[in-house]
Image (cartoon, rainbow, N blue to C red; front, side, top):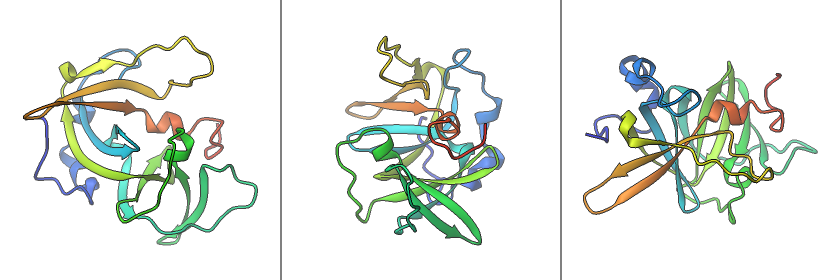
Length: 184
């Protein structure tokens, strides 16, 4: 069974104690690992990140803007006494539109000991992917396209279709020098 239906999507940290993600092997040296992924939408695409990086999921609230910050850094919010930078992944990854509506959420991540919020169009599900459901990330020869944070492509079969899931190393993306959020 590919989908975990008993797990509440709004509180993914409850899955950590029993998560098999840490015990599965990698599909390749730098590829995505079998395990549990939180899936979300950015435009028409569906992405997956390791559930172990997710601290919580919150509804979107307007952050306090930071002067001279890049466009994709929307500002900061106060999360129970912790000042959290908010990154709009839709803008960062070049989605054509970034509308804020009732489905827009912030995925709060713990990346290298730092709490960071990421804005996405919506959260879809928590899925468990086995090794045979993950294919290597495509290699693009263009030096203008950064795909280093894409670790694989998940294939999820449903009753009447197959969904493609772009698996990403959210820790690598958020800790990159370009983001400027975490000291190297």
